[in-house]
Amino acid sequence: MFKKTALITLMAASLAFPMTNIEAAKPEKPAVENKNQNQATIPYYVDESKLPFSSLEGYETDRYWGVHKGAGYRIEVPENWNGDLVLYAHGYRGQGLELTVSNPTNLRKYLLDNGYAWAASSYSTNGYDVAQGVKDTHALGSLFNGKAAKPSKTYITGHSMGGHVTAVLAEQYGNSYDGAFPMCGVTGDTELFDYFTSYNIVAQALIGIPKGEQQFPASESYATVTAPSILAQMNTNPVVYQSLKAVTKNLTGGERPLFDVAFESYKVFLLGQNTIDPTYGVAAGNLVNTVDTVYQLDNDPSLSEEEMALNASVLRVAADPQTKQQGLTGVPKVTGNIKIPTLAMHNIGDLFVPFSMEQIYAKRINENGKSDLFVPRAIRAVGHCDFTVAEEVEGFKDLVKWVEEGKKPEGDDILNPDAVADDHFGTKFTRGYRAYDPERYYSH
Image (cartoon, rainbow, N blue to C red; front, top):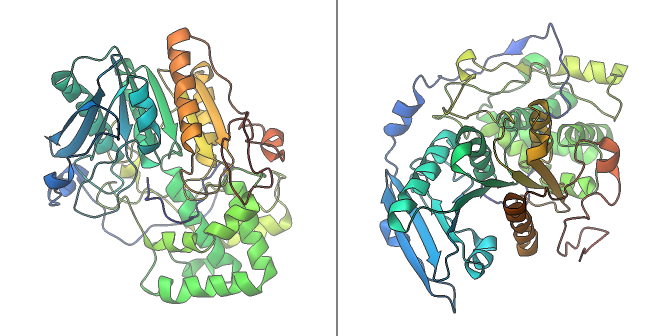
Protein backbone atom coordinates (compact mmCIF):
# COMPACT_ATOMS: atom_id res chain seq x y z
CA MET A 1 0.00 0.00 0.00
CA PHE A 2 1.49 3.30 1.08
CA LYS A 3 5.05 4.01 0.12
CA LYS A 4 7.66 2.69 2.50
CA THR A 5 8.41 5.74 4.60
CA ALA A 6 10.97 5.96 7.40
CA LEU A 7 8.68 4.61 10.10
CA ILE A 8 4.95 5.12 10.15
CA THR A 9 1.92 4.43 12.33
CA LEU A 10 -1.51 2.86 12.01
CA MET A 11 -4.15 0.93 13.91
CA ALA A 12 -6.69 -1.65 12.78
CA ALA A 13 -9.79 -2.70 14.66
CA SER A 14 -8.83 -6.18 15.80
CA LEU A 15 -10.61 -5.73 19.12
CA ALA A 16 -13.86 -4.17 17.93
CA PHE A 17 -16.93 -4.94 20.02
CA PRO A 18 -20.43 -3.76 19.08
CA MET A 19 -21.61 -0.50 20.59
CA THR A 20 -25.13 0.79 20.13
CA ASN A 21 -26.94 4.13 20.32
CA ILE A 22 -23.86 6.11 19.33
CA GLU A 23 -24.25 9.24 17.27
CA ALA A 24 -22.23 8.91 14.09
CA ALA A 25 -20.80 11.68 11.96
CA LYS A 26 -20.95 11.91 8.18
CA PRO A 27 -17.96 13.56 6.49
CA GLU A 28 -18.73 16.73 4.59
CA LYS A 29 -17.21 15.93 1.22
CA PRO A 30 -18.74 14.95 -2.10
CA ALA A 31 -19.23 11.27 -2.80
CA VAL A 32 -17.80 9.84 -5.99
CA GLU A 33 -20.83 8.48 -7.78
CA ASN A 34 -18.98 6.44 -10.38
CA LYS A 35 -15.46 5.43 -9.53
CA ASN A 36 -14.55 4.04 -12.93
CA GLN A 37 -15.81 7.14 -14.71
CA ASN A 38 -13.95 9.35 -12.23
CA GLN A 39 -10.68 7.48 -12.62
CA ALA A 40 -11.05 7.43 -16.40
CA THR A 41 -10.97 11.24 -16.46
CA ILE A 42 -7.58 11.37 -14.72
CA PRO A 43 -4.68 11.67 -17.21
CA TYR A 44 -2.52 8.84 -15.89
CA TYR A 45 0.50 8.02 -18.03
CA VAL A 46 3.40 5.59 -18.32
CA ASP A 47 6.84 7.01 -19.14
CA GLU A 48 7.89 4.24 -21.50
CA SER A 49 11.53 5.34 -21.35
CA LYS A 50 11.60 4.09 -17.75
CA LEU A 51 10.29 0.60 -18.52
CA PRO A 52 13.47 -1.02 -19.91
CA PHE A 53 15.50 -2.82 -17.25
CA SER A 54 18.76 -4.74 -17.19
CA SER A 55 19.55 -8.30 -16.19
CA LEU A 56 21.25 -8.80 -12.87
CA GLU A 57 25.01 -8.98 -13.26
CA GLY A 58 26.04 -12.42 -14.45
CA TYR A 59 22.54 -13.46 -15.56
CA GLU A 60 21.18 -14.07 -19.05
CA THR A 61 17.44 -13.50 -19.23
CA ASP A 62 14.73 -12.66 -21.74
CA ARG A 63 13.13 -9.38 -20.73
CA TYR A 64 9.97 -7.76 -22.00
CA TRP A 65 8.38 -4.42 -21.22
CA GLY A 66 5.65 -2.22 -22.58
CA VAL A 67 2.14 -0.93 -21.93
CA HIS A 68 -0.89 -3.22 -21.79
CA LYS A 69 -4.41 -1.81 -21.35
CA GLY A 70 -3.00 1.41 -19.94
CA ALA A 71 -0.61 -0.27 -17.48
CA GLY A 72 3.15 -0.51 -17.78
CA TYR A 73 4.68 -3.93 -17.27
CA ARG A 74 7.94 -5.83 -16.97
CA ILE A 75 8.52 -9.53 -17.55
CA GLU A 76 11.71 -11.52 -17.00
CA VAL A 77 12.27 -15.12 -18.03
CA PRO A 78 15.54 -16.91 -17.13
CA GLU A 79 17.34 -19.17 -19.58
CA ASN A 80 16.66 -22.14 -17.31
CA TRP A 81 12.94 -21.35 -16.99
CA ASN A 82 11.23 -24.05 -14.93
CA GLY A 83 7.83 -23.30 -16.43
CA ASP A 84 6.46 -21.42 -13.39
CA LEU A 85 5.51 -17.73 -13.14
CA VAL A 86 5.41 -15.32 -10.20
CA LEU A 87 3.17 -12.26 -10.51
CA TYR A 88 4.23 -9.34 -8.30
CA ALA A 89 1.78 -6.63 -7.11
CA HIS A 90 3.25 -3.31 -5.95
CA GLY A 91 2.12 -1.10 -3.07
CA TYR A 92 0.40 2.28 -2.86
CA ARG A 93 1.79 4.91 -5.25
CA GLY A 94 0.05 8.00 -3.91
CA GLN A 95 -2.16 10.23 -6.05
CA GLY A 96 0.39 11.14 -8.71
CA LEU A 97 -0.26 10.80 -12.43
CA GLU A 98 2.78 8.74 -13.45
CA LEU A 99 2.34 4.95 -13.37
CA THR A 100 5.48 3.02 -12.46
CA VAL A 101 6.55 -0.62 -12.21
CA SER A 102 8.42 -2.25 -9.30
CA ASN A 103 10.63 -5.32 -9.59
CA PRO A 104 10.33 -7.97 -6.84
CA THR A 105 13.66 -6.79 -5.40
CA ASN A 106 14.21 -9.21 -2.49
CA LEU A 107 12.98 -12.26 -4.39
CA ARG A 108 14.34 -11.53 -7.86
CA LYS A 109 17.73 -13.24 -7.56
CA TYR A 110 16.22 -16.33 -5.92
CA LEU A 111 13.56 -16.57 -8.61
CA LEU A 112 16.08 -16.39 -11.43
CA ASP A 113 18.50 -18.79 -9.73
CA ASN A 114 15.72 -21.33 -9.45
CA GLY A 115 14.22 -20.93 -12.89
CA TYR A 116 11.12 -18.84 -12.12
CA ALA A 117 9.85 -16.17 -14.50
CA TRP A 118 8.30 -13.06 -12.97
CA ALA A 119 6.05 -10.26 -14.17
CA ALA A 120 4.93 -6.97 -12.59
CA SER A 121 2.36 -4.33 -13.56
CA SER A 122 2.20 -0.60 -12.82
CA TYR A 123 -1.63 -0.83 -12.77
CA SER A 124 -3.50 1.63 -14.98
CA THR A 125 -4.46 3.96 -12.10
CA ASN A 126 -2.94 5.27 -8.88
CA GLY A 127 -4.63 5.95 -5.56
CA TYR A 128 -5.85 3.10 -3.39
CA ASP A 129 -7.41 1.39 -6.40
CA VAL A 130 -7.12 -2.25 -5.39
CA ALA A 131 -9.80 -3.39 -7.83
CA GLN A 132 -7.82 -2.02 -10.77
CA GLY A 133 -4.61 -3.52 -9.39
CA VAL A 134 -6.32 -6.92 -9.29
CA LYS A 135 -7.61 -6.60 -12.86
CA ASP A 136 -4.31 -5.38 -14.28
CA THR A 137 -2.22 -8.01 -12.48
CA HIS A 138 -4.56 -10.75 -13.67
CA ALA A 139 -4.43 -9.35 -17.23
CA LEU A 140 -0.63 -9.40 -17.10
CA GLY A 141 -0.72 -13.13 -16.40
CA SER A 142 -2.71 -13.60 -19.61
CA LEU A 143 -0.28 -11.35 -21.52
CA PHE A 144 2.62 -13.50 -20.32
CA ASN A 145 1.13 -16.50 -22.10
CA GLY A 146 1.57 -14.68 -25.42
CA LYS A 147 5.07 -13.43 -24.64
CA ALA A 148 6.57 -16.69 -23.36
CA ALA A 149 4.23 -19.68 -22.89
CA LYS A 150 1.45 -20.80 -20.61
CA PRO A 151 3.03 -21.41 -17.18
CA SER A 152 2.77 -24.76 -15.44
CA LYS A 153 2.09 -22.99 -12.14
CA THR A 154 1.47 -19.34 -11.28
CA TYR A 155 2.13 -17.77 -7.88
CA ILE A 156 0.98 -14.33 -6.75
CA THR A 157 2.73 -12.08 -4.26
CA GLY A 158 2.86 -8.42 -3.26
CA HIS A 159 3.65 -5.92 -0.54
CA SER A 160 1.26 -3.64 1.39
CA MET A 161 -1.55 -2.57 -0.98
CA GLY A 162 -0.09 -5.26 -3.23
CA GLY A 163 -0.80 -7.72 -0.41
CA HIS A 164 -4.44 -6.59 -0.58
CA VAL A 165 -4.33 -7.19 -4.36
CA THR A 166 -2.81 -10.64 -3.75
CA ALA A 167 -5.46 -11.59 -1.20
CA VAL A 168 -8.30 -10.59 -3.54
CA LEU A 169 -6.75 -12.50 -6.44
CA ALA A 170 -6.54 -15.60 -4.20
CA GLU A 171 -10.29 -15.35 -3.60
CA GLN A 172 -11.79 -14.07 -6.83
CA TYR A 173 -9.45 -15.73 -9.34
CA GLY A 174 -8.43 -18.72 -7.27
CA ASN A 175 -8.68 -21.16 -10.17
CA SER A 176 -6.02 -19.22 -12.08
CA TYR A 177 -3.32 -19.45 -9.41
CA ASP A 178 -1.53 -22.09 -7.39
CA GLY A 179 -0.27 -20.23 -4.32
CA ALA A 180 -0.43 -16.76 -2.73
CA PHE A 181 2.21 -14.91 -0.70
CA PRO A 182 0.85 -11.57 0.65
CA MET A 183 3.44 -9.61 2.63
CA CYS A 184 2.68 -6.72 5.03
CA GLY A 185 -0.68 -6.73 3.31
CA VAL A 186 -3.80 -4.64 3.92
CA THR A 187 -5.68 -7.90 4.38
CA GLY A 188 -8.18 -6.27 6.74
CA ASP A 189 -9.16 -4.03 3.79
CA THR A 190 -11.12 -0.93 4.92
CA GLU A 191 -10.40 -1.55 8.60
CA LEU A 192 -7.02 0.01 7.89
CA PHE A 193 -8.72 3.37 7.29
CA ASP A 194 -10.93 2.89 10.34
CA TYR A 195 -7.70 2.57 12.33
CA PHE A 196 -6.15 5.74 10.90
CA THR A 197 -9.29 7.65 11.79
CA SER A 198 -9.51 6.10 15.25
CA TYR A 199 -5.99 7.14 16.15
CA ASN A 200 -6.75 10.76 15.37
CA ILE A 201 -10.21 11.08 16.88
CA VAL A 202 -9.14 9.29 20.08
CA ALA A 203 -6.15 11.64 20.31
CA GLN A 204 -8.49 14.61 19.95
CA ALA A 205 -10.75 13.27 22.70
CA LEU A 206 -7.82 12.64 25.04
CA ILE A 207 -6.64 16.28 24.86
CA GLY A 208 -10.13 17.46 25.71
CA ILE A 209 -11.63 18.42 22.36
CA PRO A 210 -15.40 17.88 22.68
CA LYS A 211 -16.98 15.19 20.51
CA GLY A 212 -18.88 17.76 18.46
CA GLU A 213 -15.67 19.61 17.62
CA GLN A 214 -13.48 16.63 16.74
CA GLN A 215 -12.42 16.67 13.11
CA PHE A 216 -13.11 14.06 10.46
CA PRO A 217 -12.38 14.74 7.75
CA ALA A 218 -9.77 17.24 8.79
CA SER A 219 -10.04 20.94 8.09
CA GLU A 220 -7.08 23.04 7.01
CA SER A 221 -6.40 23.84 10.66
CA TYR A 222 -5.85 20.22 11.64
CA ALA A 223 -2.23 20.03 10.50
CA THR A 224 -1.33 23.52 11.74
CA VAL A 225 -3.26 23.69 15.03
CA THR A 226 -4.83 20.41 16.16
CA ALA A 227 -2.02 17.96 15.39
CA PRO A 228 0.66 20.16 17.05
CA SER A 229 -1.62 20.48 20.11
CA ILE A 230 -1.95 16.69 20.32
CA LEU A 231 1.81 16.25 20.00
CA ALA A 232 2.48 18.85 22.69
CA GLN A 233 0.10 17.05 25.06
CA MET A 234 1.72 13.69 24.29
CA ASN A 235 5.09 15.17 25.16
CA THR A 236 3.98 16.79 28.42
CA ASN A 237 0.95 14.90 29.71
CA PRO A 238 1.70 11.28 30.70
CA VAL A 239 -2.01 10.40 30.83
CA VAL A 240 -2.56 11.45 27.21
CA TYR A 241 0.58 9.66 26.06
CA GLN A 242 -0.06 6.40 27.90
CA SER A 243 -3.77 6.31 27.01
CA LEU A 244 -3.19 6.85 23.29
CA LYS A 245 -0.38 4.28 23.39
CA ALA A 246 -2.63 1.71 25.09
CA VAL A 247 -5.50 2.26 22.65
CA THR A 248 -3.10 1.94 19.73
CA LYS A 249 -1.63 -1.29 21.09
CA ASN A 250 -5.06 -2.90 21.35
CA LEU A 251 -6.13 -1.71 17.90
CA THR A 252 -2.98 -2.99 16.20
CA GLY A 253 -2.58 -6.53 17.53
CA GLY A 254 -2.51 -6.50 21.32
CA GLU A 255 0.33 -7.00 23.78
CA ARG A 256 3.44 -8.07 21.83
CA PRO A 257 7.21 -7.57 21.64
CA LEU A 258 8.65 -4.36 20.14
CA PHE A 259 5.46 -2.34 20.56
CA ASP A 260 7.16 0.33 22.70
CA VAL A 261 9.75 0.92 19.95
CA ALA A 262 7.02 0.90 17.33
CA PHE A 263 4.85 3.50 19.04
CA GLU A 264 7.75 5.90 19.45
CA SER A 265 8.55 5.48 15.77
CA TYR A 266 5.01 6.01 14.43
CA LYS A 267 3.19 8.26 16.92
CA VAL A 268 3.84 11.52 15.04
CA PHE A 269 3.37 10.13 11.55
CA LEU A 270 -0.08 8.80 12.38
CA LEU A 271 -1.32 12.27 13.16
CA GLY A 272 -0.90 13.10 9.48
CA GLN A 273 -3.25 10.34 8.39
CA ASN A 274 -6.28 12.41 9.34
CA THR A 275 -5.49 14.77 6.46
CA ILE A 276 -5.10 12.06 3.77
CA ASP A 277 -7.76 10.09 1.94
CA PRO A 278 -6.01 7.65 -0.42
CA THR A 279 -9.38 6.24 -1.51
CA TYR A 280 -10.83 9.54 -2.77
CA GLY A 281 -11.83 9.06 -6.39
CA VAL A 282 -11.75 5.29 -5.87
CA ALA A 283 -14.34 4.52 -3.21
CA ALA A 284 -17.92 5.67 -3.78
CA GLY A 285 -17.93 8.03 -0.82
CA ASN A 286 -16.60 7.71 2.73
CA LEU A 287 -15.77 4.12 3.66
CA VAL A 288 -14.52 4.77 7.21
CA ASN A 289 -16.74 3.25 9.89
CA THR A 290 -15.90 3.59 13.59
CA VAL A 291 -19.45 3.27 14.90
CA ASP A 292 -18.83 -0.17 16.43
CA THR A 293 -15.20 0.29 17.45
CA VAL A 294 -14.44 -0.07 21.15
CA TYR A 295 -11.34 1.66 22.50
CA GLN A 296 -9.56 -0.15 25.32
CA LEU A 297 -6.83 0.86 27.73
CA ASP A 298 -5.89 -2.62 28.95
CA ASN A 299 -6.07 -6.29 28.00
CA ASP A 300 -9.38 -6.93 29.75
CA PRO A 301 -12.22 -7.03 27.17
CA SER A 302 -14.73 -5.78 29.73
CA LEU A 303 -14.91 -2.00 29.93
CA SER A 304 -13.81 -0.09 32.99
CA GLU A 305 -15.46 3.20 33.95
CA GLU A 306 -12.47 5.03 32.48
CA GLU A 307 -12.83 3.13 29.19
CA MET A 308 -16.57 3.77 29.04
CA ALA A 309 -15.95 7.47 29.56
CA LEU A 310 -13.32 7.48 26.81
CA ASN A 311 -15.62 5.68 24.36
CA ALA A 312 -18.44 8.10 25.13
CA SER A 313 -16.15 11.07 24.40
CA VAL A 314 -15.04 9.95 20.94
CA LEU A 315 -16.67 11.06 17.68
CA ARG A 316 -18.16 8.19 15.67
CA VAL A 317 -17.90 8.09 11.90
CA ALA A 318 -20.37 6.15 9.74
CA ALA A 319 -19.54 4.86 6.27
CA ASP A 320 -21.72 5.88 3.36
CA PRO A 321 -24.11 3.04 2.41
CA GLN A 322 -22.86 2.91 -1.20
CA THR A 323 -19.35 1.92 -0.04
CA LYS A 324 -20.49 -1.57 0.96
CA GLN A 325 -19.12 -2.92 -2.27
CA GLN A 326 -19.48 -6.48 -3.37
CA GLY A 327 -17.18 -8.14 -5.86
CA LEU A 328 -14.37 -6.39 -7.68
CA THR A 329 -15.14 -2.69 -7.29
CA GLY A 330 -13.49 0.23 -5.51
CA VAL A 331 -11.76 -1.11 -2.41
CA PRO A 332 -12.83 -4.78 -2.50
CA LYS A 333 -13.35 -6.72 0.68
CA VAL A 334 -11.06 -9.55 1.71
CA THR A 335 -13.56 -12.15 2.83
CA GLY A 336 -11.16 -14.90 3.90
CA ASN A 337 -12.71 -17.35 1.46
CA ILE A 338 -9.36 -18.34 -0.03
CA LYS A 339 -9.13 -20.99 -2.73
CA ILE A 340 -5.40 -21.76 -2.78
CA PRO A 341 -2.53 -22.27 -0.30
CA THR A 342 -1.71 -18.86 1.18
CA LEU A 343 1.30 -17.97 3.31
CA ALA A 344 1.20 -14.44 4.77
CA MET A 345 3.99 -12.50 6.50
CA HIS A 346 3.74 -9.38 8.66
CA ASN A 347 6.04 -7.28 10.85
CA ILE A 348 4.79 -7.28 14.44
CA GLY A 349 5.88 -3.66 15.00
CA ASP A 350 4.43 -2.24 11.79
CA LEU A 351 1.92 0.43 12.79
CA PHE A 352 1.39 1.80 9.29
CA VAL A 353 -0.27 -1.35 8.00
CA PRO A 354 -0.46 -2.91 11.44
CA PHE A 355 -0.04 -6.50 12.52
CA SER A 356 -3.77 -6.65 13.25
CA MET A 357 -4.35 -6.75 9.47
CA GLU A 358 -2.98 -10.30 9.45
CA GLN A 359 -5.01 -11.20 12.54
CA ILE A 360 -8.22 -9.95 10.89
CA TYR A 361 -7.32 -12.00 7.81
CA ALA A 362 -6.69 -15.13 9.89
CA LYS A 363 -9.99 -14.71 11.72
CA ARG A 364 -11.96 -14.35 8.49
CA ILE A 365 -10.23 -17.38 7.00
CA ASN A 366 -11.10 -19.43 10.10
CA GLU A 367 -14.74 -18.30 9.87
CA ASN A 368 -14.82 -19.57 6.28
CA GLY A 369 -13.43 -22.94 7.34
CA LYS A 370 -10.30 -22.42 5.21
CA SER A 371 -7.60 -22.52 7.90
CA ASP A 372 -6.12 -25.60 6.23
CA LEU A 373 -5.12 -23.30 3.34
CA PHE A 374 -3.53 -20.57 5.47
CA VAL A 375 -0.17 -20.12 7.20
CA PRO A 376 0.53 -16.80 9.00
CA ARG A 377 4.04 -15.77 9.99
CA ALA A 378 5.24 -12.99 12.28
CA ILE A 379 8.55 -11.18 11.70
CA ARG A 380 10.19 -9.18 14.48
CA ALA A 381 10.61 -5.81 12.81
CA VAL A 382 9.14 -2.33 13.26
CA GLY A 383 9.33 -0.90 9.74
CA HIS A 384 6.60 -1.26 7.15
CA CYS A 385 7.38 -4.21 4.85
CA ASP A 386 10.74 -4.54 6.61
CA PHE A 387 11.70 -8.03 5.48
CA THR A 388 15.16 -9.36 4.77
CA VAL A 389 15.93 -11.28 1.59
CA ALA A 390 16.25 -14.45 3.69
CA GLU A 391 12.80 -13.97 5.23
CA GLU A 392 11.06 -13.47 1.90
CA VAL A 393 12.94 -16.31 0.21
CA GLU A 394 12.16 -18.75 3.02
CA GLY A 395 8.48 -17.83 2.92
CA PHE A 396 8.25 -18.27 -0.84
CA LYS A 397 10.20 -21.55 -0.78
CA ASP A 398 7.92 -22.96 1.89
CA LEU A 399 4.83 -21.92 -0.08
CA VAL A 400 6.12 -23.64 -3.22
CA LYS A 401 7.00 -26.80 -1.31
CA TRP A 402 3.47 -26.79 0.15
CA VAL A 403 1.92 -26.46 -3.31
CA GLU A 404 4.14 -29.11 -4.87
CA GLU A 405 4.26 -31.66 -2.04
CA GLY A 406 1.01 -31.00 -0.20
CA LYS A 407 2.57 -30.67 3.26
CA LYS A 408 1.46 -27.55 5.08
CA PRO A 409 4.42 -25.56 6.54
CA GLU A 410 4.66 -24.17 10.06
CA GLY A 411 3.38 -20.74 11.01
CA ASP A 412 2.77 -18.62 14.11
CA ASP A 413 -0.23 -18.73 16.44
CA ILE A 414 -1.21 -15.12 15.77
CA LEU A 415 -4.75 -15.33 17.22
CA ASN A 416 -3.59 -16.60 20.62
CA PRO A 417 -3.05 -13.51 22.84
CA ASP A 418 -0.72 -15.41 25.20
CA ALA A 419 1.46 -16.59 22.33
CA VAL A 420 1.58 -13.10 20.78
CA ALA A 421 2.48 -11.49 24.13
CA ASP A 422 5.40 -13.86 24.73
CA ASP A 423 8.80 -12.13 24.69
CA HIS A 424 10.03 -14.57 22.03
CA PHE A 425 7.05 -14.23 19.70
CA GLY A 426 8.16 -13.95 16.08
CA THR A 427 11.59 -15.52 16.55
CA LYS A 428 10.69 -18.68 14.61
CA PHE A 429 10.80 -17.04 11.16
CA THR A 430 12.83 -13.86 11.72
CA ARG A 431 16.12 -13.95 9.82
CA GLY A 432 18.14 -10.81 10.25
CA TYR A 433 19.63 -8.18 12.52
CA ARG A 434 17.51 -5.35 13.96
CA ALA A 435 19.44 -3.25 16.46
CA TYR A 436 16.31 -2.27 18.43
CA ASP A 437 15.32 -5.89 19.08
CA PRO A 438 16.68 -7.25 22.37
CA GLU A 439 16.73 -10.72 20.81
CA ARG A 440 18.70 -9.24 17.88
CA TYR A 441 19.30 -12.14 15.49
CA TYR A 442 17.78 -15.49 14.60
CA SER A 443 19.65 -18.00 12.49
CA HIS A 444 17.34 -21.01 12.70
